[in-house]
Length: 163
Image (cartoon, rainbow, N blue to C red; front, side, top):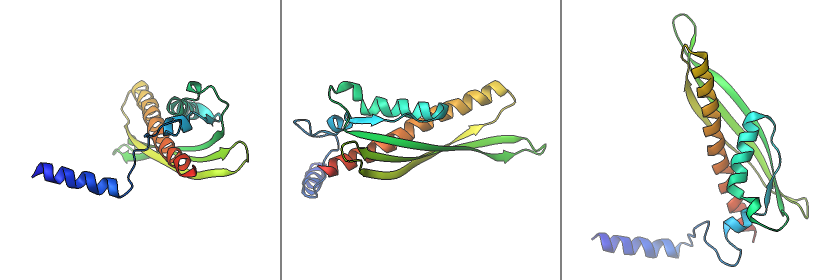
């Protein structure tokens, strides 16, 4: 029964036009298109983390050609206090990272994609200031990775649909 179900699923998925995003040949893969994207500098420490995560994913260094696109990103980050103890100290915080980004064609100046991405992470606030600061920094690093993944996915789709 499993074999029949798997064969049916394979036929149904191939008939719907579903294609892997990174599939392609002759330079038409998402990786080849992403390597033509230049990431503009982003302000702040979290901006640097996000820019580094994006650069790791688009890998402009793997391409010998000049960039064809530029990714402009503006971030908005905040820290909210959630849990209050009886002595009115905070026991839990939520770090929020939102990014508005634009993919710009460098030859024409046209904006190919204008979208937002974001995520949040919970942080336990403990009596040790060092532990709380370390948790906040670790949350910023995780959020940068998550938001970078969201941005690269949307940029990949925009570039695939463009050609």
